[in-house]
Picture 1 (tube, rainbow, N blue to C red):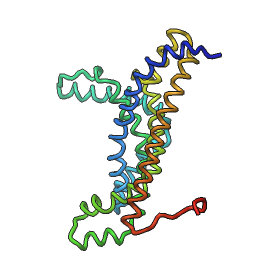
Picture 2: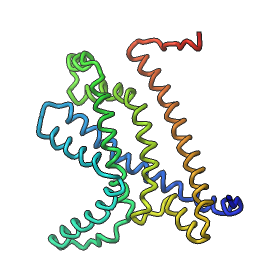
Picture 3: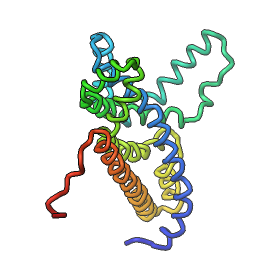
Picture 4: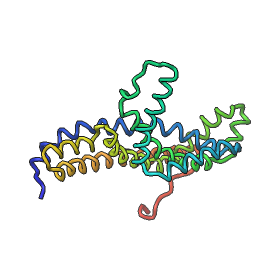
Length: 245
C-alpha cells in the first residue's frame, strides 16, 4: 500500500519546509497575542462602545471558516491598498507583497477570537484585592496590570492558550491555498510530481505528529513551572493526588 522508498526520498524535501510552518505560527501569534490582550482588557472595561465593536468583530471571526477568511484577506486587502496607493500616488507595487503577510493576518484571526476569551477569563480571575493593594502602594493602573495582574493571569491562561497554539499550527496548513509554499504546500507539489500523494502525505502526517507532540510536551513543562510560580506567589502548597499517597 505504501511505497516506503518514495516516503524516504520525499522526507528530506518536506522537512526543509517545517521552518516556514514554524514561521507562520510565530508570526500569527505575534499579531494575535497583543491584540487579544487589548481586546480582553476592553471587554472587561466599562465603555460599552469598544465592547460592542469587539464583540461584533469576534462574532464575524467565529462565524466564518478560516479558509474563507484567508481567501477574503488575500483578495480584498490588495485591492483596498491599491486604491490608497493610487489616491496618494505612492510608488508601491501592492501585488509584489509576499503572500506570507496575508497568511500571518488570516491565521491570526482565528487565534484572536479564542485567545481573547482565554485572556479575558484569566484577567478576571485575579483577585481584585491585589489590584487595590497595588494602587495603595503608589503604582499606576498600568503598573498594576503589568506587574501584578498580567503575570498571574498568564499562569491561568497558558493551559488554554496551549491548545490554541496547537490549533494555529494546524491552521498553517491552509496557507498553501494562497500561494505560500509551506509543509502542506510542498507535499502537494511533490505528490503531483510523482503521483504518489498518499506516501508524501504520510510523511507530512509523521512530521506534524512529532512537531505538535513536541510543542505539547514543552507547553506541559511550562504549565508545571507556572503552577509552581502561582503556588509561590499565593502561598499555596502543591496538592498531592491520591495516586501518590
